[in-house]
Amino acid sequence: MPNDSPQSAVAPQKLLLFVHGLAGSATKTWGIFDSLIKADPSLGDHSAKFFSYSTAWFRLPFMARSARIQELARSLQTYIKYNCRDFSEIVLITHSMGGLIAKRYLLDELTLGRLDARIKGLMLYAVPHNGSSLASVSSLVSWGHHQVAQLQPYSDVLDALSNEWSRSGLESVIRTIYVIGALDQIVDPRSASAFPGNFKIETLADKNHRSICKPNNIGDLTYKIFRHFVLECTLISGSVTTEYENSISDLKTKSAQPAARVDDVLFYVYSRLVEPWYLKRADDANLAASATAMSVWASGPTGTGKTAAIQRFVDFHGHAHTYVSLASYRGYPLVDLLRAIATTLISILGGQEDHPVKDLPNLIRRVAELLCRLSREQRFYLFVEELPLDREDEFRAFIDMTYSLFIELGKMRPRNPISLLFSSINDPLPYVNGNFDKIHERMRFVHFGAWLKEDCGALVDLIASSLAVEVSPEDRSLIIDSCRGSPRFIKALFRMAAGRFFPGASIGELVVKAADEVFPCA
Picture 1 (cartoon, rainbow, N blue to C red):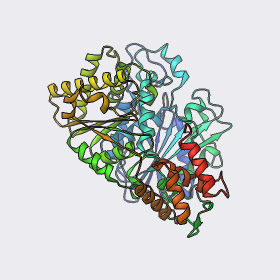
Picture 2: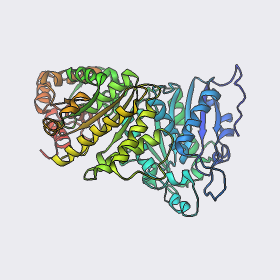
Picture 3: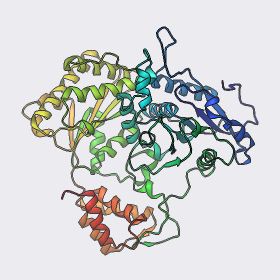
Picture 4: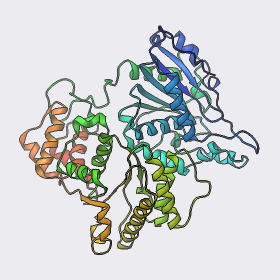
């Protein structure tokens, strides 16, 4: 168990908080990590604490209840609040299920608008982001083991967690690293890497699921990677140079170093960290005015900024909110779309649906109940992105379901307002007008079209200025004329110019390559 006595006046100011996994132990999981940290002069102003909770591989009838990941995340929040208050900076070091607990904790804090700014890093040793096949085996001989049930490959809880994490932007605020053991037979490397193309991975050829977090000595790669990561997080404070240090081809550099990090300037996902590089337009004011008053359905071509505008709105107003992506549900029945939303809401509340509701009317009522619970303390926004609607019958069914949800919410009289924020590529208005006119009383429809040329030019100027590069008037005009009103195209071009894969390419050549990436079917 950790030593939870109050910190003395001379205690190190930086904390390394270790979180073990399924069937692990507060200290045994980590071997001699604590001793190595104490003996390492480079970590002299750091100290280690070890978060503990009850866990086992198997559970038999009448054994103690196993807490769910959501409950353990709330327990971690309480632990940090009361046992880590004397530290100025915190790095979370996690193994296996401990990484999922940490991710759930961070997402919950972000949703509640109280993300702890002291948390500088998240280290993920062999974390089953997409589940573990061994959990499936364990579930066959366990009774009511919530942790094992949640760790089964691609469970609803893990799907919801992965979707929330990928859209949260937390990795642009909190430095993150994924460490994988090539000999791990419990967590498949594909699950430990979270998603294809993840470049924040370190792989240890001689480590399995247990040994990956047990360094043998200070020269062990497990420890070397750990120390390097910790020092990046707590000493360099985010100013570590990135892979984008190369000079930008065909764009004359004004100084030896860019004025800002390229991955911040050319952000994929909005967070407050990237606000200096967010170009505010009339669409933002329109969305904010609409979302302040009622629910909103934003539509428009991909890459026009719908998601970023919605995320920015809820972040800046400090409202509690959660995110659900339905991109992978194309072709699914309406009841499955609503069930995916319900699963995410249940996950946030720390539960798990043991007997899922199957019929649509009761499922609508269940979602309304969950939203009312989430709005008890303050206004709550439910952001559902990438609605997989193409056909007229799909739109009509979803709009009818949405109106029924509004009716149920009205009956329940929630303590605080609840707003739905939807986004889709296709415009729902043709299926609303003349059929569901009353929904206009509760929801506004905002269309995001192609950007105006002046907005595209402003974005080119903002990026060039932020990265301290010069763009000739001719190249500027070429980029604006070629982008088809897509900010995604502009960012893709600058990202290619800043990378290592097209050395010496001209702006004309990069325009062609960016078009192939952003408009592949054109």
